[in-house]
Length: 116
Length: 113
Image 1: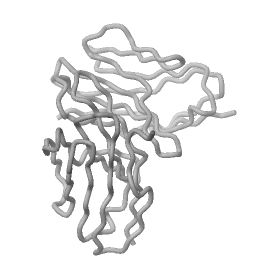
Image 2: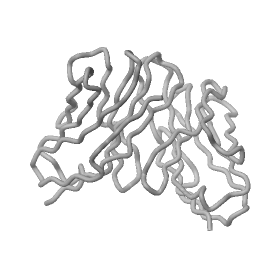
Image 3: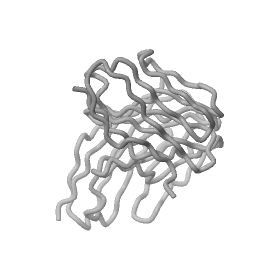
Image 4: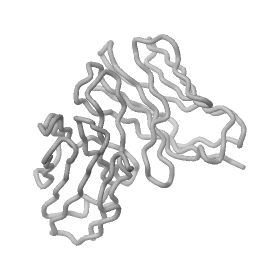
């Protein structure tokens, strides 16, 4: 079974600084997708970024970027120029490839605190 | 124009009662899910449906019964509620297709007293 591990229960960063959230996963599949979701106090689950395992290029969305290391099964999220609105729980998630009805397997989350 | 909507947002009920949570998506997606988020924020899949057909049924007590009247709706009925059922329940949907992400509703906080 696939597992997703987020080893940092909580991280704190100063506003405008850069922070990296760690995620490792375990799978025997070669085709899969990785995601980062953000859950602010409003409880909404918001997609931050997505990475296809077959793509070597790291995904980027504005201030959010990933460092995808397939051999190491690592998928970290870098947030640049942190803003107060980035404060949230961040979940790393895995899904097997194939386009089927498989759901996401989530890590336990990292609580990100932004210090003003 | 909410994409995935769940009702109610909050549900407080007593042990032993039966309750339902409704979910509707207007994204034209064909796959829908129920997830449970426990008090430690861990998210675990409960069910998935594709075109009204049950695909995934994780180890969930049979007091939980999903129903999909059409591919835009997936409701969750819970019988004989227990204290341990207290959690946030999320509905999600996606289109069948390579790499498509899940779109989540805003969750239903269920409190069993």
